[in-house]
Length: 196
Image (cartoon, rainbow, N blue to C red; front, side, top):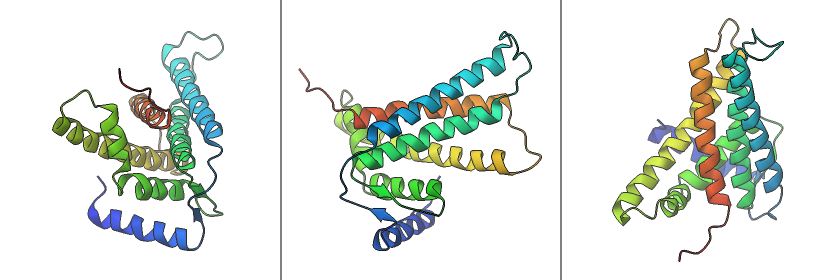
């Protein structure tokens, strides 16, 4: 979980990035569809690789061990969804540094620390009683941010640490987390129809 010390560190970095114009706010809303398309494509790629790697009935791919790439594609789906949510809110990221770390910090700063993610998720669960929906919204916001962090760290570990092999169960977990993240972010970005 993100403890208070880490959240304060992210907030400090985000404010610095805003000041030095690495993070731009109140920008023209654009590229949302581009990021959503990349997120969807990455998620579909992860599903396809998972199926090909686990079902062993694809001619020519019977021995494919694609778990590493399921993890990578799942993470990228979450990354592009985060970028879509930021772009949808008029936030642009400009960096020669790690765009992945910057996107995570911006997502936490603009949506988690401000409670906006919780608020949007509360709307999504409005059928529940008010207090339960509020609690569920905070729990879901905590879970989404934590899952994004897990996948960001897992992708780095499995991609860059030599000698580490991704197991099929880790790939399945990555795919499941990315699917949930994708659904929740798209629910926030897609305008809701008025209740009848």
